[in-house]
Amino acid sequence: MNIFFDVDYTILGLDNSLRPDTKETFQALLDEEHKIYIWSGMGERWEVVNKFELNQYVSGVYEKPTHHFHERLEELGVPFEPDFVIDDYPEVVAAFGGVWVPPYFFKRSVDQEMQRIYRIVCDFAATGTSEDKQYRKKGSIIPLF
Image 1 (spheres, rainbow, N blue to C red):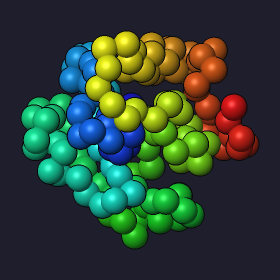
Image 2: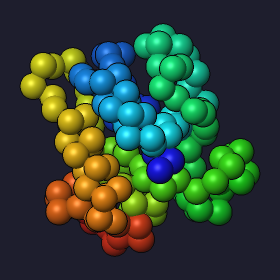
Image 3: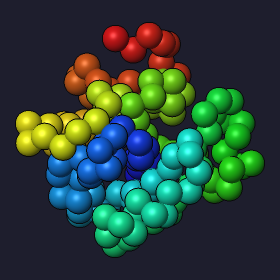
């Protein structure tokens, strides 16, 4: 699958820290033969990919549409629709399907969202769905809570 991760408050905290277990989760997803893409509503965030040495995991970096999600993919240079997204922005998750994650603000050892994301992706890859409350199928209705 082509899996798109948001940057701000998804993998990158307000304190400019990388969410715990991001690299390990990326590697596990690659081992399962998924492709990882990074996108952000703030444009192409290569500086984050480079700073945290994520290049070996990432197949592409794009600007994320923040409205008219499907319609703007071509305009923003995204060559295909994501199969699965991970984002703290519920509207994006509802549009494409994937995992809504609680926003990540500060480095703390108790954050285990990346392990949860991995389990949900594995569930979805195997069955086309997940029972986890943070999973949302494509076209879900908001609110997500």
